[in-house]
Amino acid sequence: MNTFGHLFRITTWGESHGGAVGVVVDGCPPQIDLDISTIQFELDRRRPGQSHLTTPRQESDTVEILSGVFEGKTLGTPISMLVWNKDARPSAYDHLKDLYRPSHADFTYQQKYGIRNWQGGGRASARETIGRVAAGAIAKQILREVSGTETLAYVKQIHTLEAEVDADMVTLEEIEASPVRCPDPIVGPKMVERIDQARREQDSLGGVIESVARNVPVGLGEPVFDKLKADLAKAMMSLPATMGFQIGSGFEGTAMTGSEHNDPFYVEKSETDRIRTRTNNSGGTQGGISNGENILFQVAFKPTATIGKPQQTVDMQGNEVTLEASGRHDPCVLVRAPAIVEAMAALVLTDHLLRQRAKS
Image 1: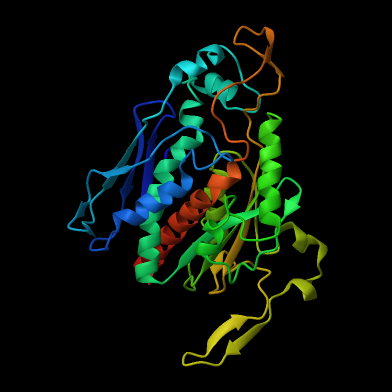
Image 2: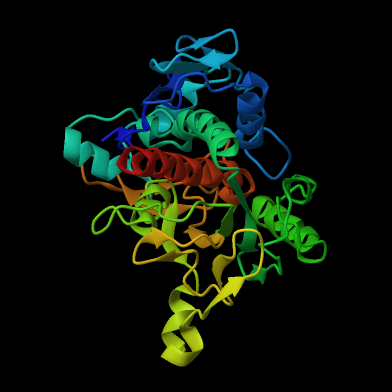
């Protein structure tokens, strides 16, 4: 499926080296002040060619809004957004048209559909995420205006290097100040060196993105099958190159006792006497419903599949061949991933916010 969401629905379209990529957003409430510059800012965070740590493909990724917005406000009608592919080089993939690249979608797409766009991965390319980021930028503005909710993501780990970050306090400015989008001032520069080394060795690296959502209203989530954490997991695992998802204590919680893992309640004395938890091993959800604490989760990304080292594979006729891939590829996808993770989190939260408002 190319459509995601229930009330706030997006449909992305386009291929990596086709004419353009884009998204249609349906279900956006009317009269939301929409700042186009913030949409472009999010796309700039995702775009290629940012530094020597990313693919050298040069795309401005300038967004065009074709419908659904008038005089700076949403109309409540479908919002269509488009980004032209300006630096596509489909001929660079001619030598791959009959090959199945290791750990790519070439083989599975061919088997499923009987045809595939072999130019840069086609629909399976991470360039498809442009539509997600553009739609997520709208979702972020809705969350900010309606509930004051903020979603942030940053690089937590690359290869064996793991950062120390206070998710409750980290800021967008700190994240963007790092060329690798790791706000740890000690580990971040080491990550840059590690990625650069992998690039020089014609290899690639994976890692972990951590994300936090703050000021999330209590009550979001639709048990039993549309639990908030279930929809977040689906959203993140639908991203290219993702290999794992965990929320709150995640797998570390399996080594804890119940008395260690439970989050005790208390009343925070204030004008509203808000009920809170002293710890957040639940990651901001209980029973699949947001409890008002920060939602904290991590997403694992595999090393970029395209590398310059020789690899064994087969062609469409079943002949064994040696592949030495060339082209413009990220040595580590995590540098550009925070904007994508934030966008998907915002899409899930906006959809559930609208569902809860309709219900209550």
